[in-house]
Image (cartoon, rainbow, N blue to C red; front, side, top):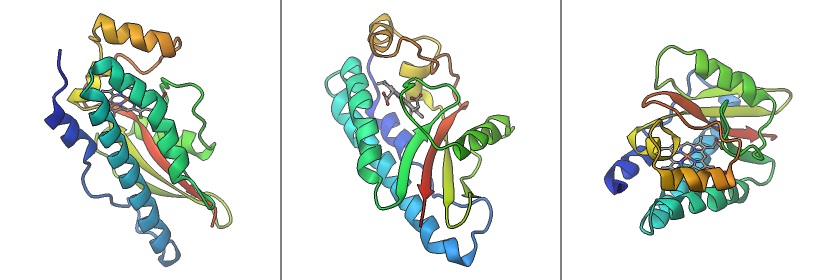
Length: 182
Ligand code: HEC
């Protein structure tokens, strides 16, 4: 089985990011910043994954495992935190702020796929921003119903309580989230 580089390219280049509700004037700059952070996160993940894939599927798993959390922490600074979250986590050590949970539930319940990102008022000057992630064909290799024994073995080694399998194409997988404390 080989990964199709083209479909991975497509899958990590998402469309334009739009806010579901019109952001207030004060949040305009913050919103743009959040969108940029998520775009950078996606692009860097894609780049790392491509590099890993050139050495095979199990190497790509290594890359996801080691680089994804690192990229998130590198992008987080100065009162702005970035991350990924899911209702069915693979990596259970990944932490997300409490407000993200209700957003995950919102997208899970949304009937339509390809729902838009949302700006979330938290409290005081804090605001959150979430962008939903949906399962596309290349994701099924590591999150789908028919995972090859080699990949399965590698996943079991790192993630004994993996809940992020048996997904179907188009299903809601989780969110990219940004929390700003400015
Ligand atoms: C090469 C295998 C592989 C492919 C392909 C892959 N993933 Fe993953 N995914 C992983 C691994 C490994 C992790 C755990 C990373 C970690 O340890 O933080 C993960 C974690 C995630 C997470 C973070 C939440 C969690 O459960 O820990 C999301 C969201 C996610 N993947 C979505 C996707 C989507 C969407 C695609 C397709 C665009 C995709 N993945 C393709 C292996 C893969």
